Image 1: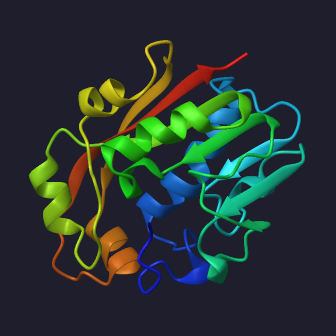
Image 2: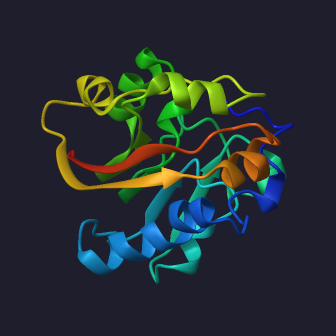
Length: 191
């Protein structure tokens, strides 16, 4: 689970660098406007932290996060949270989970439709080198897909660059190098 010393509480995802704007705001607006995701009914925002999703959708959104410093609606472990809702949205959380936990999460999510929004890296060496001060499980797109249910559908993919400023803001790493990354979105229908 997240290292609370680097996740910056309610300021998480509010940095002004180009990559942060893309990852936490612009990409979300693009996904909603493009129809790649359909957040219907009440939405569980798994790992929703400080509620960024609420700024972009009119539906009822319930943020579920294990980090109380981000002030989620529900402080809970997403692997065990079992309140049924129409739609689940899980953005940038898979890298906090082991392979077994990814499978467990997808199997246990109490929603009709689950959207997994995640960054993947073909150059894992560059990603790990830049991501200091935290323990993560970064994956290639193939590695992530191998953990998702077979009926998961790829709904969206877009390449972008992670700037060195992102790592300075997010992880206090002044020596990171820019590298490529890919945003992928999967839909998993459970009903």
